[in-house]
Figure 1 (cartoon, rainbow, N blue to C red):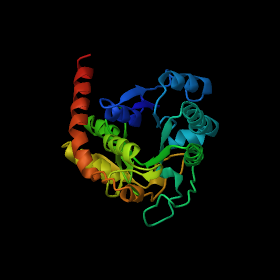
Figure 2: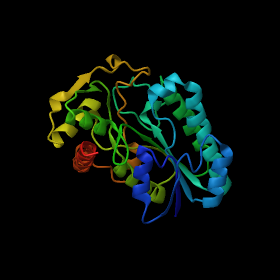
Figure 3: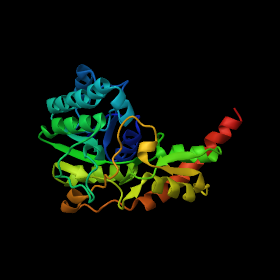
Figure 4: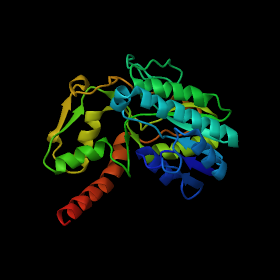
Length: 292
């Protein structure tokens, strides 16, 4: 199977490239290869590759950037997705779109179902809802809503926290945002399985068991043998951020269960696999920095 992956230099893009490489013919696309905001570039890339499936995580994932620059957010996240969907339609490719728990309003107190209405309070969330609808217009499509990504290849919340502690600093993190955490490599494996075996539609995807950002980062510090007391939990509304954060965004993995796909492992197990490799990388970088 020929698989094109947009945003291949991003956190999830890198994980997807790693997971799909080997058994599939993978074409990693960065902005230099095809700027998704330019329809002609996307069309040219897809006509050359002629992929069977396009996995599309590319976009602006920063909630505060989207809130500050809504026009840019819509250009990249909505119109960029339109260009990807239209180009995929042109070559008969299916599209797997990477969406987010930020499409919800955070007002529920029980896990969000795939069928629950979307009502995002942020620009970012609204762009992702619009993009989901564009992809749903394709004959073959999968939408994967993920949350709090961590994994190899690019800076993420775990890496920032451990890097701060290792240099003697404190790290502030929200203590009151409850949701799922998503290890990119585990999510990539499930996406591969669903594209192969399961029907099109919307899927919630993340590692099992809910947690706060504070739970996640403190556990990472403990696994790394670092001082978890340097992780300072704060209410999200005291973090000085532009965009609203959802206090509750736990997602039920109902579509995975219905499709008979085994659920990803708990986040604690995924974190225990990831932290040693991250720690080794951070120590190597610190060593190189000290001798440069």
